[in-house]
Image 1 (cartoon, rainbow, N blue to C red):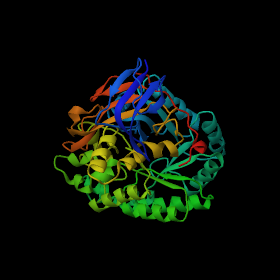
Image 2 (cartoon, one colour):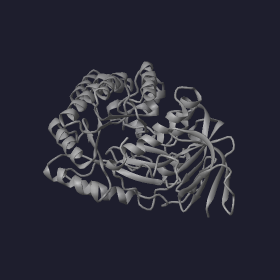
Image 3 (cartoon, rainbow, N blue to C red):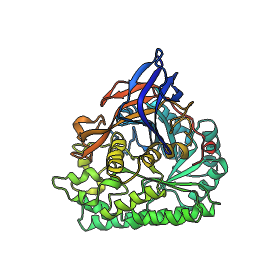
Image 4 (cartoon, rainbow, N blue to C red):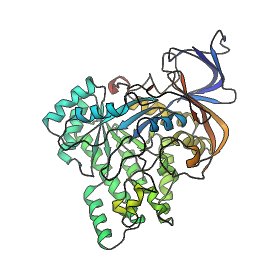
Length: 462
C-alpha cells in the first residue's frame, strides 16, 4: 500500500522545508504541500523532522578476530541499525584465509548477509596482500560485484607495505575506485606494546599509550603523500580520532588532494580518562585507534563544521564486556579491539550535535547520510529526499528525551559505551524503501528485507 508522510519538516543536506511525501513501490513518488490523501496509509510527522535514512559506512558484522567473534551478525546488527535510524550499511569485510583472492571474502559475506539483513547493505573489499592477480581481480569486483571501495591496513597481521599501497592507489584510481585505509604506524605501535608489556604496564590505559596520536597521524600523512605520488588518487581515512591527523588532512585538502575523512561518535564524545575506570571497566573502550584527549574532541567537531571531516560512521565492532573483553583483564594486548555503536550514531549526533548547537541540522544530514552516499556510490538513490530516490526515511522527534542504556538498545552485546547519557532528539520511525522497519524503538520489519546494493563511485562524486 502506498504511504503519505504528512505535516513533517523535511531536512536534506541543503534545505529545510515543510511538505508531504508520497511513497509508492519503495520510492518517493511526490513531494509537495497539502498533497491529497487518496487511499494512502497516512503517517503523521507533525512537529518532527523527516531526514534521509542514515548510512553507516563503517561496520564490522560477523567479524571473527581469532580470539573472539563480534556479537552482532547481519540480522541482529541491522535490526539495531534500523531502530537507531540507519537504513543502509557498508560493512568492512574481515580477513579470510591467508592468500585468498578478493572473490573469496565477497562470497563469504554474501553468505552472512543474504536473507538476513533487514536494511540495505553493501561491502568494502578487504586487501590482505597485493600482487598482479589481486590488482587484475579488482576490475571484476568493481564492475561485476559493484564493490568499488577497498580497505588497506597499515597494521595488524595483513598490513600492506608502502609498495603494495602505492600499487593499490594507482590501480583503484585507474578503475574509478576508492582506497580506504586504517592508518597506524605498525612499527611504533608494536614497539610501544612490547615496551609496556615487558615492564608490566598492562592495564587498559596502556592500550591508549601504546597507540599515541603520532602513530595515527604519521600513517595518515604517509598515505596522503603516497596518494599524491599516485596522481592524486582518491583516499578515504577511516575512524579519524585526533587533531594531529586532522591537520595533515586539512593541508592536503587545501592543496587540492581528494582526501575524505571519517570520524566516529566515540572520538567526538569520549576521552582517554575512560581507560582508568575501576573494575576493569576500561576494557570496554579498547578500540583502535584509542580514545584521545578532550581537546581532540572539539577539534574534530570543528573539522566536521569546516567540511574537512565528511562522514560520521561507527566502526561498530561489538564484543561482550563480561566475556570477550575479560580476555584483557590482566593484559590489555589480549583484549579484542572494538566497541558497539551502530544503533546510537544517529541519535548521538542529533542530540550532541544539533540539539547542543555544535552543528546545523543540515550538516547532521550531510555527515550521517548524504556524504557517505556520495563518496561510496549510493547517491542519489540513497542519501537524499527527492522524487525517484529510495524511500529510506527517518522521522526524528526533536523533543523526545532518552537516557541511553543497554536495556533500551537492540545491539546484541552486553554494554553500551554511552550508558546513562541523556539525549534530546531521537528517531521514532525508520522506513527502508517505504517499509516501516522500526517504530517507537521497536523493530517491526522483516528478516531478509534488506537488499545488497551495487555501487559505482564514478557516477556520484562528492
